[in-house]
Image (tube, rainbow, N blue to C red; front, side, top):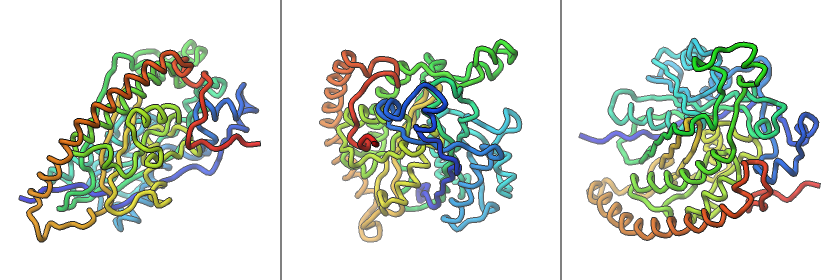
Length: 398
């Protein structure tokens, strides 16, 4: 029996037209372009128009992904929508998306915050690998601007709206989703939350007066969590794939904060040239972050046929998720002239031996960084400390 793999055969993105720059925010709240850029790496973000919703953005990205895959909505067997900002609590936004697309398949929503797209990708992969479905649409979409307190400079400067989508289809050749790593630790879940919306707290005037219907974040806790789990999850998913850090052609991290990415990258020991960032244009788009970056990386020629892409994220819950994906078909596929199982067994053995030294190096580097950062201003509350300029950040605008 041949194994089934889930190949990314279609991709698309959508971002609203309205651009909100750091200079625009200077007129709205006590902040500055320099303050935001130094602390986050963000220069602008997209804000949805009044007549746009999470579902309309999701549908726009989905149509583009279906066009690339040369499929119609009625060809879909399943739709997975990853979001924490649905149109309504009921009905679920995935059903709204399914209806607006004109699809006839089942649909459901994944709610794990910024890790949502990778969770959705992992879920869609399982349906294809087991043979249950053939064509699965996975969408990451957020309209966070309507849950942000625009008087709070510690949160309003961070977030933006957008959507990204991929179509997964089956392949008999080892490609597509190679490995996943998912995790959750709810002990400090309220460090990133909208406390006033849900059954835990009655929505009344007191909730509104306190602003508990807006997104709240304990920056220090989130920073420490993110910089710990992103390297750990990356190494774990590489282990699951039988690969090492050197086998990654491109790392696409969750586009939350350039400082978090910088520290995670240095702990992994991967070259910044292998890291893709577009947060300077869009800010933190939560579940849309990684698919937006994935599509743009391909459009800019950063991803080529046969490349291995590692996607790693952290988010509300608190959760983490990572995936190794091979883009397109493997280059130099020799399955017709050699036994495929033998090729992969030899390759896995070689990588297993190399992985031991990689793990030691990363652990040592992480220990040194933790010691250094405890004594530095980066351990002050996130987004309020003064930090150094990052290697991929632009020079200060005049």
